[in-house]
Length: 111
Length: 115
Image (cartoon, rainbow over all chains, first blue to last red; front, top):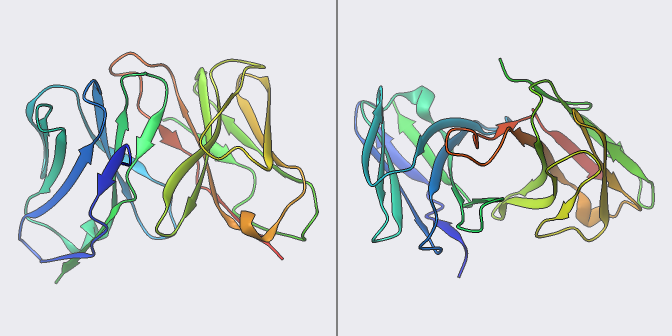
């Protein structure tokens, strides 16, 4: 089992809709969770991080963490064509000194 | 603003050549990383360093070595380039492992082609 798993997609949503991206992780003791956005041909950039169970909101983005289910998600409200990118989930495992990345979910927002 | 600079955006090398990829960060970060990114395989860790002259193998170190002589600079070396090392190479850094410190900042990447 991989440390971090994501659906590769592609996920397509119409402009203005909510995009929901999901990630599961294997290490129950993991403490730190991140979402990175990567535009085609560019490097990943951090958009959200979350440490506690529940929701964390930042503008149109909401990260959700459920440690009991070992599940972290990213919701993008009012999706825009500029949100079209690959979204990478990253987790720091309980061992503490490495980031583990999922393979990413490709999102396309259709105007 | 945090800045991680990789020396080359595109690089073309021949099989068997020794290749150096350079990375410099200006944030006084302790930890630096080298990843490669391939379609369908995601980001895979090659090596990381948590201090000057310290290094740790990641998941795929074979065929690579690293050097960290100064805190701000982390070099990736392909001892004898092979075609299966054609990839996007990403350098990254972070200041520490305490919550709030572990945000990973990436360089712009080097697309290496080995012919």
